[in-house]
Image 1 (spheres, helix red, strand yellow):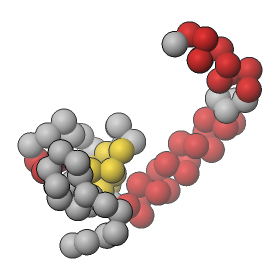
Image 2: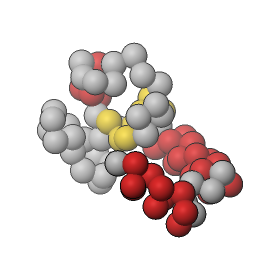
Image 3: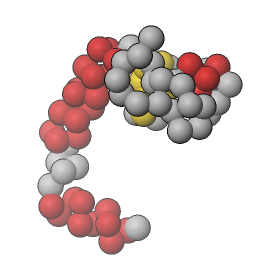
Length: 76
């Protein structure tokens, strides 16, 4: 099934879901044989809602404020 989101650069297969733990889109081979084996994989619709909540939570905690990001960049 083609979703129009591109293909996995490792397996050359269409992306089909989101790995919640890693917050990346994955193809079936990533889930069955790759780095995301045994991870929590959800549909794009559920993944979009999960990411929206994660972004809102990070905004609430102030992770996107200039002071926080500047400190993190200096840490790196």
